Amino acid sequence: DKSKVTKLFNPYERSSSVLDGLRNVSVFNTLFPDTAYNVVGYLRDELGVFRIVMEQPFIQGNIYDMEEYYDNGIESKVRDMMENIGLQDEWGDGLNWYNEKYYVSDTHFGNVIEDKEGEVHIIDANAKYNEKYKKEIFGDNGFEIHDVAEDIRFRVANNANNLVVMHNISEGDLRKVL
Image 1 (tube, rainbow, N blue to C red):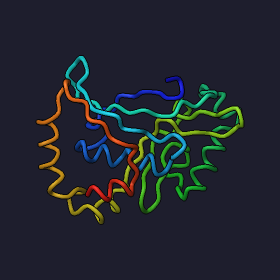
Image 2 (image 1 turned 120 degrees about the vertical axis):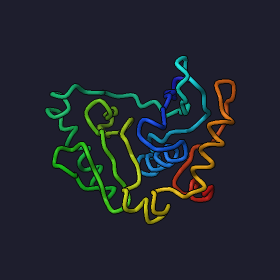
Image 3 (image 1 turned 45 degrees about the horizontal axis):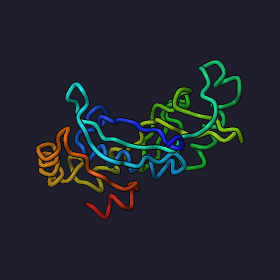
Image 4 (image 1 turned 60 degrees about the horizontal axis):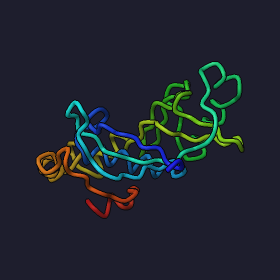
């Protein structure tokens, strides 16, 4: 299907558990619904690394190199988009954004597509709960105790032969699960 891109995501690269990785996916989907991930399953790659299999809408458009990103005003469009969803630039470089609830990083030129209408789309940023907010809603360690037990059960139950189908999760869906 040419309308989708399939990505393999290692939840342990940017989070402490599979559940925390799925929380990050839900934050991305909440902030960037036009490029929301649809979790379709889990597998182990050829090196045995656990991966979440996700699909994302294919956006026809341009990915610019760094010089073009600034020369064509893409950085400014990203800045406007991020500010419109209530995020502030952390360091003034347009790469890290935050508010009292969310933290988004890695919004560099390779992770942004400009479509033929001139709209920008974030396709591969790191999105997660702000640590203080995460602690408020999930407890002192940033996650509930049952998350650890669930993560252990998840690791034991899932291997390369299992494919678990899930729907496109959003923050609201994840709250229902928790």
